[in-house]
Length: 91
Image 1 (cartoon, rainbow, N blue to C red):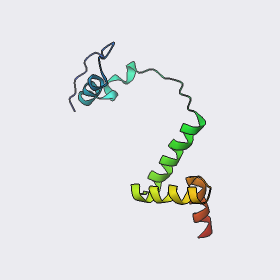
Image 2 (cartoon, rainbow, N blue to C red):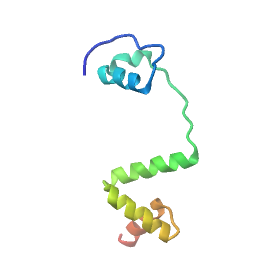
Image 3 (cartoon, rainbow, N blue to C red):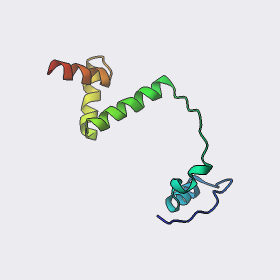
């Protein structure tokens, strides 16, 4: 990654242009120009992100995740509930 500190463009023409800019620049160099934002997630999206975090924590493969989600659906549970159930059965 280059150590260039060019001014951040006011507007980008495309997603690719944004990607190219940040591929060549470090956000660490622009930290003083960043602003805080208040981000609110829908409960559904928040639940999906928490589930993805759980999958990463447990280091599940894509195939394992697919099997967990299929089994959860069969048992009329969500994936998190199934994982909790299986862990508690073996503790």
